[in-house]
Image 1 (tube, one colour):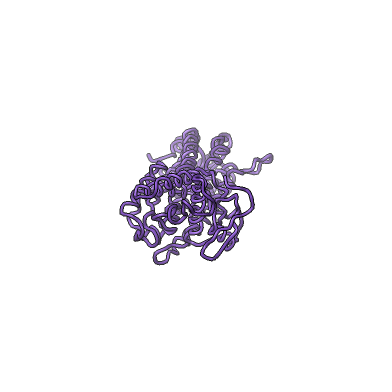
Image 2: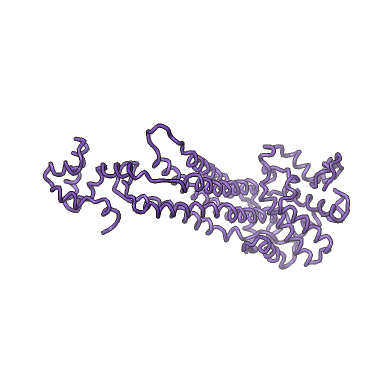
Length: 449
């Protein structure tokens, strides 16, 4: 581990800088902390991005070794990069999101940390850049312009697979179980928040199930573009200073390390200058947020009422706040994605920060909502039956038998007089008691005939 004694002197192109001896980062990282004092520790580059960089740098070192990099240097880089990927060196990444829009400072932060950790492993002096140089070796055949977007895609893919999709699946399964549990409970439907014709509570919940199923489908549908990696495009997409086959080999190594189907991007100019794939993924998450907002609101409204001794719908409220945040995040991602100019988009840190935030919030909220609300939902059948049997909208079942106008008059008269549909229909002489009982059966109003 790096020494905790005072500082060491390192140099960048602007001069000398004091670097804490207990940190593996170097002069360029320190320079960035001086130039971008924005937001403090809460605004640091997301750890998933740092871990993704570790995966990328390991893959690049392995491929560079195939192309002639000294095996001793390559192996040290790989070991140090593994520590970054495993989160063992998180304290050595102090930079905030609000830096250069290409993420260059973070790429150099990673290069310096891996370089110095590798130097330490090889018995060298921190900051000496010998025998492992942050640019010449750790960043070999790479540019910030292709490494940062590569790390963005790796981080996003991992977060989606480890947090978002499992959370949505858990919610889907719980809602599906409730839909089946409530299949025989007939309730009055509501449109425009007012009484409508009947349906089962299971049918109502089946709509929620389908929404979450489609959410998962949309997110999975966006992933093939996320699996495309910019690595090998270097500064502007041409691949200057790389070797033929480097891009394909790096993508294959990343795929092997993560277990995800990463491939090299077919067009590196698009991969550097535009981040439509992240906008697309964010859009799918935005739609998911819309779905969860509707589901959570429905559930809290279905459980609402004037009775005292209440239990507040806190889980529903948390989900709706998460949904609002994700919608806001998508606005930021959209603006960032639309601001790629010429050969480089320079809103990269902003975009990945918000994409990762949305994925984590939606995944976590889905699990919390499932475990602390959905699985415990019970139907108040007594209240459901009372409201259904008192609803004037049951008159709709009479339309095929006596016509719309007479049915409407029954409903309006019953409402005006505060009487039941049955009594009003008989009083108006439109039908007999036997006919009413035969024609107005909620269980026969649940689908086509």
